[in-house]
Length: 171
Image (cartoon, rainbow, N blue to C red; front, side, top):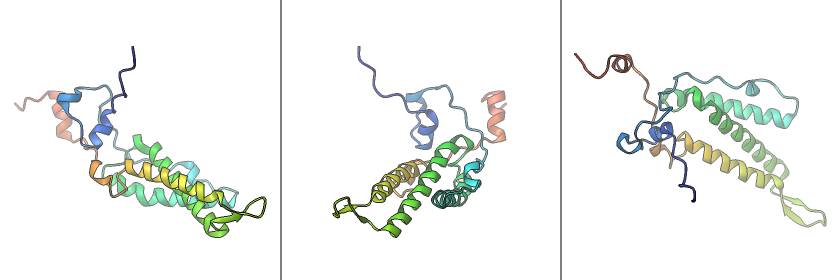
């Protein structure tokens, strides 16, 4: 017998997309509200590197982290559980900026083995990193087309905690 199809979309992703329906999806394991802590900047974005290219990429990644993490956290789109994917986004951004700089310095076309003009390898890398950045940015609603399907996480309130403990009966 064949496989039953794609795996179910995780509940937090459905809630971010505002597509979670209790009647359709029911109660799933692991659908607790995330711990609302702001993620810390990764150590590898802080520690200085010896190579000039790696240092340029690290600086671009760190500036992207510093610029976006506060705004996304305040908007309810970034919590500690999403730090890894946000780190990948910032890292890809840093590498994209490095590839752009290399294309500007070396040019888009180089000379091949037989003195023929070929496309610079940095143009291919730049294109790959741009695809990565665009895909990861969509997960956080950072592109114009994806902002409509991303919803902030609901922050727990004291009343919600009391309702869970005491039940839904207001009396």
